[in-house]
Length: 294
Image 1 (tube, one colour):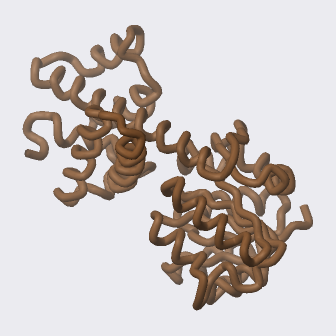
Image 2: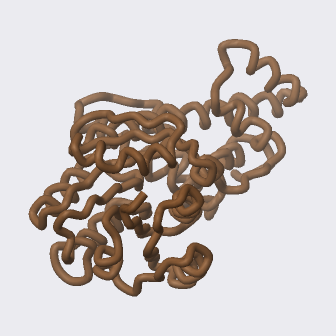
């Protein structure tokens, strides 16, 4: 537990991962976020430094977790020039946990190798409570030696740690996980929305779904929330739109026609256009129930 750890991106996922590692006895030495108050508050809580620059993050740590929003943000923090995590990065290990395209992970790996650093994909298929409890489903890709180097850290974050393969493959698997999850969520919203329009008791309907071929993990996590319009955000509709686009793009690149993925992507993009992007993904039910959103 001597490796110094830092986090870039301390929203709800990154902050709770940092808290978890601090609780496990790891030295969390620095945090950084574009939202400065969030970084300052977490730094005070953990006894870490709110690093003013990306270069300062790298200087303060041996293993740096990044949990940023999208491809552009991921590439920006590993910029070849200017303030960058790559400054003085020789010997560092970067664990990149954002859901971004496989191509972005490959480009970040290429840039890091040029300065003597290694990168790993740390793709997460869980949410905020699991981040805090250390029970993430964590899919990793990249340099096998780097993975073994940080395995003791990752094992404190994950109850189901899995090495997928070379860089890019973990991101592919994560894209497919989210593609199927989002399709299931959209399908459940339509089923419950139609049930409501038919005047059915939705509690009864969910119980029947759970005991038949309509059962799914999404039914467990989102069904009651859809019924009760309780869309507190654990995984936002905006992120669902982004992730659906990543999967749809992979399909297009592979020459596949994915009509369900395309329709789900359009539904989540519609939520964003209606100003509902910060609702939980369960908020897609707002588009399917009569009398909610047009």
